[in-house]
Image (cartoon, rainbow, N blue to C red; front, side, top):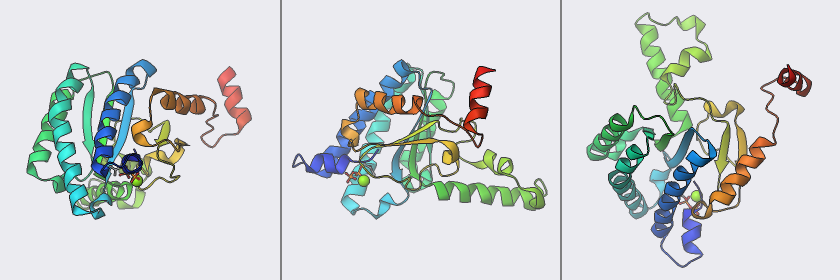
Amino acid sequence: MDGNGRWAKTRGLPRIAGHRKGVENVREIVRMCGDKGVEYLTLFAFSSENWRRPDREVQLLLELFSSALNKEVGKLHKNNIRFRVIGNVQRFGEKIVAKIAKAERLTSENTSLTLTVAANYGGRWDIAQACSQVVRRAMEGEIDAESIMPETIEPYLSMYGIPEPDLFIRSGGEQRISNFLLWQLAYTELYFTETLWPEFDGVEFDKALESFARRQRRFGLTGEQVEAARHA
Ligand code: IPE
Ligand code: MG
């Protein structure tokens, strides 16, 4: 969800006003997922590199995250949405950690949308933390170090149990992954748009979904094989 700061700047507003607008937009996009048949939405809210921003901005972002947890979780639950947070959340402090745990518990049985927020998340961090669990299990003799496969590591990744993403959308004009779901994006369709996150609306969402629908996903096969399988 990139482009909040620039959205604010072009309006002569402080960056935090852009982040506030960004949160409002999350609400809209989450609402639209239902209509569009999207069952899993994962939002990159705060990366492990974002701590390097000016202290004041980091502090305001944390306050915004905390107040969004207070205000939105009840509504998510009412809408049958399962809410999860992935990332190294300990660094946000006890209060936020407790709120996250409570929200995850409350909504864990919900069945419409699964909404995952990545906060203090990094794709490399995720793979590293999974590896340290795998190593621990190997030392306990539960895993054979000689036969580690991707499937051995997967259960320890923070997105375990959630299908790999079909579509990745990055707003704000940059064309890079920036340490998002590195492992899970292996076969994901990538979509980049100049539109700044606060302006990424239903029309933009549809454009992304239409672009996705036009693509042939081959997963290593030839185009002919995919077509033959489709008609079989
Ligand atoms: C939001 O957009 C992403 C967050 C880290 C919260 P930015 O804050 O990166 O906005 P730009 O790139 O400065 O426009
Ligand atoms: Mg940015």
